[in-house]
Image (cartoon, rainbow, N blue to C red; front, side, top):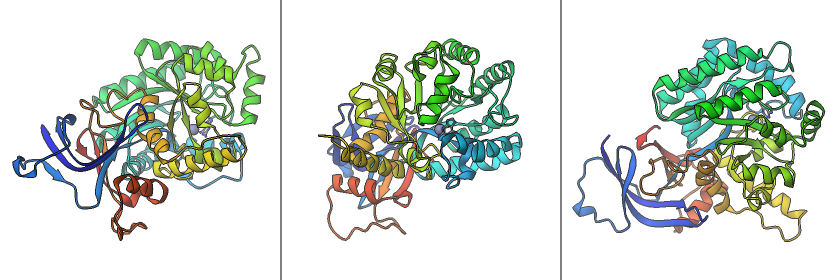
Length: 429
Ligand code: GUN
Ligand code: ZN
C-alpha cells in the first residue's frame, strides 16, 4: 500500500466536540496511517500515483463505530418486538443462537453480517458472537478476510436460562482462553478478541471473577449488558442480594476496567454512574433497541454529565437495523422525547450523534489513539459520502455548505449515500 493521497472536502470531530470542516483537504497516507494534511493542496504539483480526488459533491467522514452488535442475531432482524427483553431472549433469541452449533449456518450468517455492516459504513464493530467458540472464530475470520476492524467475543453463559443453552464454568473458561488464542493467531491487527460475559443473569459470580482475572492477565477488553430493562434489574437484585447495585456485581468481579463497554445503561443510578466513571468504563447507547424492546429512554446527556464515555450501538437484533446512520437518527429522536419531560433539557443534535458514532465510539472502545477522526498518525478509517448517489432519496439541486450536507446525511441519508469505505487505508467496499 505504501503511500496514498486523498483530496476533497472532509469533516470530523475534535476531542472537544468541535466539528472540523475543511472544504478542500489533502490527506497523505503512509501504510494506511495519516502522515500529513494539507488544507490548501495544489493539484498541479501532485504525484498522481495512488491519488484519489473526490468527485463533485462527495465528502469524507470518519468510519462509523458500532459499539454493540450481536452478529448471531442478524437472521432475526425485525422480529420479536411483541416481547420485552427477558421474554424476547427466551422466545426468539436463544432458540436462534442455539443454531450456531452448526458451523455451516454460522459461516453463511457471518459472511453476510460483515459484508452488510461494512457496506453501511461500520469500519469498527464490537461483536457479540456465539456461545460456541468455533462458530465465534468464524466471525473473527470473516472480519479479517473482509478487512473490518472488529472486537469479537465468544459469549459466556453458565447459568441455566433456556433449555440447555449454557455451558459449565470449566468449559466457559477453557473455551474463552482457546478463543482468545485462536483470534490472536489469525494474525490480523484489525481483529481482537473481547471477553463477553453475556449479563449478570447468565453468569455466576465465580465465572465473572475468573473472566475479570483473565481480562487483566491477557490485557483484553470486556463487554457485557447492564441496566437495560426494569424486570432484568429486579432479577439481578434478587440473584445478587449481597451486592449494592447491578454495576457493583460487575465491579466486585473485576469486570469494570478502562477497557470495558457496557451496553444500554438505561436505568443506572447516580452511584453506579459515579463508579463506572471512576473505573473509566464506557456505556454504549442503543436507542433503537431500547425502543423496539420497550426497554426505556436512555439519557445520554446525563451519562456525559457524569463523565462516562459514551458510544452508540445497533444492538442487532434488539435493534432493528444494523446501520449506524439509523442509530444516530434513533438517538436524536429519543433525546427529543426526553426533552418533553425535562426542564431546560438540551436534546442531542446532529453534531453530538456524529461525535458519538465516530470519536465517541473510539473513546468508548479505547481505540481513540488509532481511529475516530483524522488526527495525524491515526489509521485512515473513512467513508466517502455522496448525497446524490444513484438511488439516493437526497438530491443535489441546490448548493449546500459542507455542514448542511452532514446534517442532511444524518437526518435523511442511508447506506446508499456511502459510496466507498476504507479501513486502515484499504478500500473494503
Ligand atoms: N441482555 C442479555 N442478552 C441480551 C441480548 O442478546 N440482547 C439485548 N438487547 N440484551 C441482552
Ligand atoms: Zn445486546
